Length: 265
Image (cartoon, rainbow, N blue to C red; front, side, top):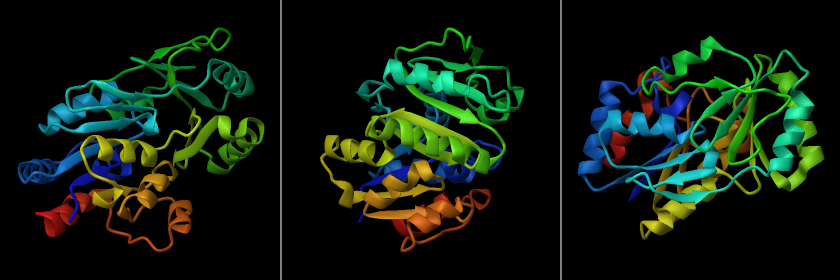
């Protein structure tokens, strides 16, 4: 029934240790052999995801930075939308004096932080993708796929979410990927819009798509796909936003792969 399978990575397809487990890799390879089209749909940077894709061993489109970039299976850019430079400058200016928050920027080919955070290495063991530090007094403004803010206090970040939406409105897209990571992309950017574009390129529609996710940055994709499945450990706001959607197991149990093996293989 479904020709295209799209899945988020962290909290969804990846294990809690942030890698692709052997069983999941096997299922994805069998899925590809059966003629299904797999799409990585994530907030991660495309450089990061391309290494994960290589390790899985299948050709696949990549929706990255929550839809701000889309690459085909040959790594060609087929969609790109940046955060406007003036908005990047304004966002950094708003947050730079708050020492409890780490500011992250995904530029075209690199990942920049306002301060060193070695704890992030655990997320990128499989790909080896790493960051460098930028000067908040002179931040990069061009070719910014997304800018995001990390603090381990969800309610604290919610106040910034409200400020960003109030000040910038539809000039930006704002979403939580995890309770502690608030992400800002360009206007109209979402995984759902990107998935629709990928489906059309492949000669299909959203009615041919099944999607998996666990974050608020997955909501549009889960809503727009013919079938959207929510992870057991998803944010409460995701389940509240999509009350009619089915909830499957956890990423610790490789529930995406188990669902795919049962229903598509």
